[in-house]
Image (cartoon, rainbow, N blue to C red; front, side):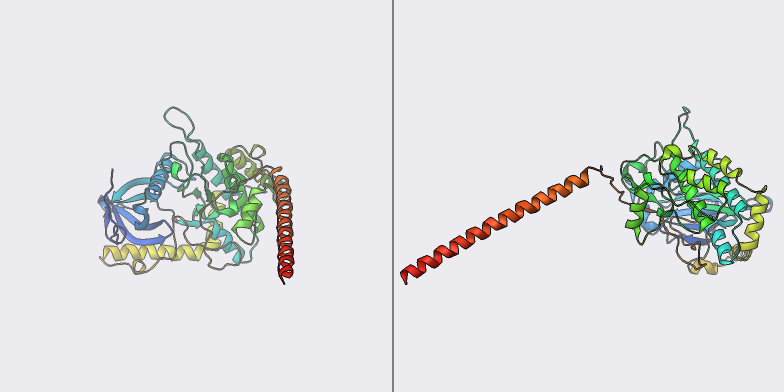
Length: 425
């Protein structure tokens, strides 16, 4: 069945347009590598109004069957997860051939921005707050991992892109896992066209994600979440390198990371277990990781404490965000085009794939490492390299012998010709 082509559907999205006769677009909020996010609202009777985040595919991907299936799969997976620590999808539709998803509007920021703001301020990292955020994210992942079909069989959901950019923290201190765009699950449509590639961000990738023919399961996500916490608390990634090739080789070597020295021994133990290269020795579920993290806190830490941390370090961004929302609503009510719609917006509430952000250290506005697909490392048996070495040496010896015989034949021929010519003279 051929889908109707609407190559300019995205360009026709504009403030004031209603998608599905329900969601009024206010302003384009963010734009990434595969999708854009719009601030939208629904209005009802008696002054009722509610904000939403509408995620739409970019037009160049809308006609690509593979990307379209990935987009639709994300909606199907997230729609089944009902947990406070997972961003809720409210609706899905299509506008002139362009699919869109409607998410709850998250008034907050990414965990990466919070960690970076604290580092930039030169303040000590509030370890208990970071543990609380991580534990909440683990709870959300566990809910996704436990999704079952109508027969009760596990759907075997794996996020595969757990990162501090894909964990939002609300102003009230609630962590929410977002972006299941490359999640693995039984029955996923796009999986057939996406196998054989490394998916996710290398900073948080588990060894089995980069080794060919390795099994990826929920323990891959617990590794990634441990890698995120390791990065937040130490300021270092688990496996660094000068380039992607070096990082891939380090990850694929399945070596245990360096034990952090700047955190409490109990936290260090949790991190080392979460980051064990052998999946069988890790936390077997995100719930186990969540419970382990809760035992590491030195004092009771609530969502209010997380919210206070957000206000202390990201209060100015929050005020700016609220001002932009208020301006967009006022301009839409007046029938004007918001100024932010005339250029690329600066902040995202639910960032699309590869959305811009900031690094943990240094405070510079650098792009976040995008989620990516790369060819996996093929790990060969240990006996292959000695065999190849021996074969290479034999080939060199044979080649040398052949060249020597050729030289001898050439020399003999030259001497014969010289004798013949001399005889005639």
